[in-house]
Length: 132
Image (cartoon, rainbow, N blue to C red; front, side, top):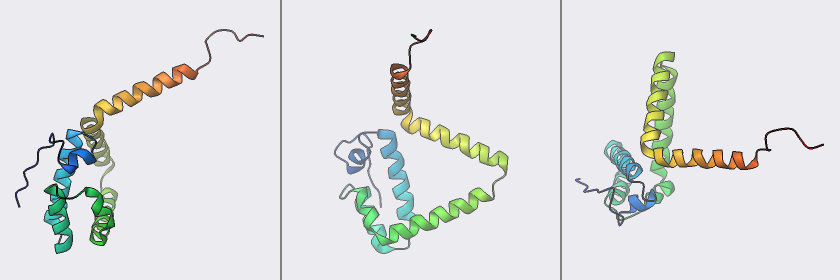
């Protein structure tokens, strides 16, 4: 299946699902395509086709039993893979994950960090001697 996907198309459900975050919508699209291409479940594949084509929302996956099983299997495989990594490789993977999060959520994370600092500053007691 060829899925024409434009992560900047506000009419596409993936764009709405990610609240307008184009990088996240694009990553979600790639992940859903990988899931679709890797499943042997024809019902799940059909649902993923519908999501990728914009005919239904990704929320529909949560109710699908085959998706839960696939998610569990993927989680177990990821855990086994992680357990077999050397400490150096784990550190490399952690850095790559941090880079990916920064690429996808960077501006939002930066804004959130600034807001947390503003709130902290607003609630800190004034510097200097305490009144007696």
